[in-house]
Image (cartoon, rainbow, N blue to C red; front, side, top):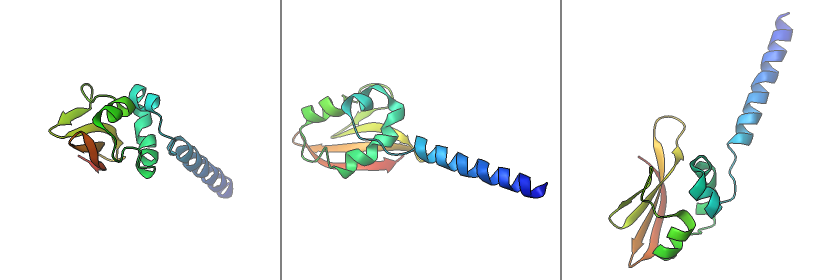
Length: 113
């Protein structure tokens, strides 16, 4: 009987890990997805950063791609646009910070609060 329970428990753990990995996998960045569905942002950040999509972009281009951070959890702080980009899975929120100089992107960071 114990072997059956161990086998069933092992199968359940493997299934849970597989489903979790599938649901939390990275997905390609899309402007529409970023702006319309906050729950997709954490899965898009890696693609956005890896492809260096925002490097050297103008403020207008960033606003077109990511939206103007004026409502919800997003904000504008001095020369930075700050977009909510999920949680670290424990307690901290994660943010995508886009820094401008002379209306051009000079830095993009994925940081905890």
